[in-house]
Length: 624
Image (tube, rainbow, N blue to C red):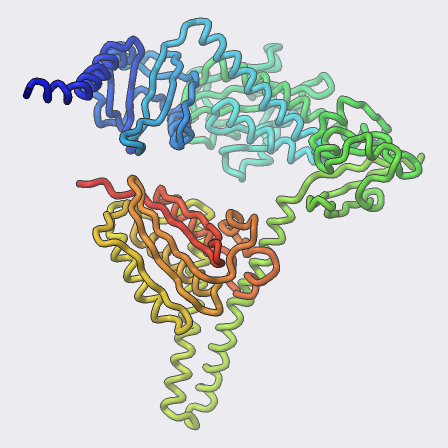
């Protein structure tokens, strides 16, 4: 009978043993990572593929990931955190220093429904896989270059075009810095930079003694130079510390060399792939420059080249002498939502500025347009160029509102402080001791309000620059919540602030000071946006592997569609009830950035019976 009972318990053990045997005997390398991204599992196939034994890597960061691909590795892990699987081709390092082309299948590692890390299954790719990966990568680069060219084609300002080309250079070639130089007779002029000091812009150098001169004499379009082949000290771009390699490609405009695109390397090495990408980018840069330089000439000569207009990222309409549309490009359709069939032969669906002037207009769809009108010769025809500036307009309006609101929030306490200080200064002897104390107390309270507002503004600035100071670790969340409830309950006679916090709530993982700021802001909003009073409930629950904190009020609630927008910087909701409560519009923005800095989340929900529930989720602290 004992044997029979033992047999009943064996299947799970046999499954575990079978799983271990499968992993140990698998032909593919299997590597598992914990949530701290250190190695949990390293099977024999991984030892054979990469050269490190399990004892050398378990508990450590994986040594197989090249430094330049660490961002890719972390991005893949984050993408699969919510479930699913990603398969991607990449490179990994062996213990002997060689590089492998591999395909990795990445998925989340779970235990009892909770995430405990990630698992990678690595397959060494053959020549066909490498070729496919190479072609796919080239296709991606070509698509990206196409996007760059489309973005440039509507620009009139040559400097803006050059700045965008320099910025794209680092992304596409992995260069540490770069720039574009114009060829001006016998000299070079640095006109755009990326990753270099701004003071270098405009500097000049001799063409004949430069790498560009050497490249022109060679008859080639791309070249590479290293520190071993010549010093870089006399070059204007030598400000990059540790510069060891320069690659450059010529850009042609109108069939002649117009300038050169530089890719500078100080930390990583350059391969033939990056050289090819640089050559390809330089060629497309020439196309973008040609478009930018030729746009005004094309308009003046009444050129209606479909390829140029259709490739523009801006909406372009050509109008006849009566002001009716005779040409309407795809971008115009995309921006306005109106196909060419609806507008041909009719005036454009927005008012026009005078030729040579700009005008901003809001469509019925809510989009904002920046419209420029240009006359074509003396025949009465016009070319209208317009672009979607909705995002910029909304940011401008948000900033204007922020400045107005901040001025108001500052003016009120300052006025009170000035008034009471003036009264004390001019009527000190006439005031009773009680009146003096009351005046000083009021000044102190208003000065405290000013201090809190300034601190919130500084915290918002740090949040926008990703410089929030957090020190994550285990802390007593229950005690923090109870203290917050006690302090806020005493602040309002119309509100009842209650705690629903279970005994034995486990510690949370995060920064107690940051969490205190979050909870304080949520409680402050709950009280502020419930002017008629009511109950404010602070509730906490442990839902392994997280702890959820809810702050629920019975206030005015949130307008539909605003549940995410309230976390944007400067956003205060549409005109209506919420605007009358003051504030500078960065409180919830700071709350979310602090939550993210603690690897947590915060969301807003409307309550069925009215009011709002704000839910903060933090990780449970790992047991010691």
